[in-house]
Length: 213
Ligand SMILES: [Zn+2]
Figure 1 (tube, rainbow, N blue to C red):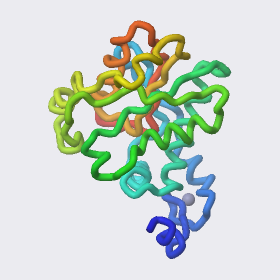
Figure 2 (cartoon, rainbow, N blue to C red; figure 1 turned 120 degrees about the horizontal axis):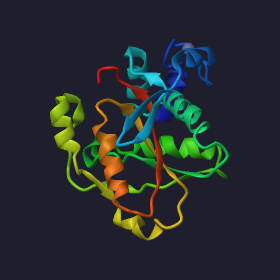
Figure 3 (cartoon, helix red, strand yellow; figure 1 turned 180 degrees about the horizontal axis):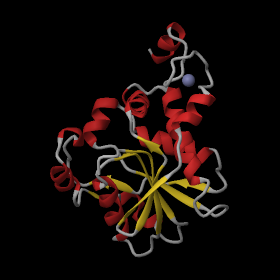
Figure 4 (cartoon, rainbow, N blue to C red; figure 1 turned 45 degrees about the horizontal axis):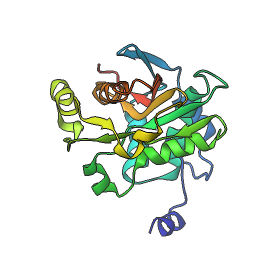
């Protein structure tokens, strides 16, 4: 179905609508701006793009409709920051997992795909490990207040049982998410990973940041 759709509607730039199978370099350069850094529990979180109306449509296109070009904008934004974190040294990218609710709705793990595409750009340096799982069902964050978001996610993540035997001698970790809003998700991920003393978190990276915190 997706293949059929792209035959009928050729892939177009998610920002200006121009038909161009490689995306729009100019639009991408206008979209990406200087990384903003926020500290969460003493870990620097880098978020290059302001989550405005355009960024929101790119994220939704990538996430809800699996649009390849929209996803490539997110991959590029995250890669642009990863290149500058501890350059030349190995990193392990850890995606925030999709909630079971989101997996049921979309049928694929959007961030795991994004992280795979970031890692494949530099496979000798970057690895991907899905270390985290939700330990309880969480509500959809979008309709919740700041306080309710924090309560909803507090203690919601833990290190997946599947990977507990793989924690020794890992390169430093970088946690990856699509949008930083209140920081509740990032905080829950940091807390979950810090529970394992053999892990070292060096940074978090999100493609976008909202400006309302
Ligand atoms: Zn464009």
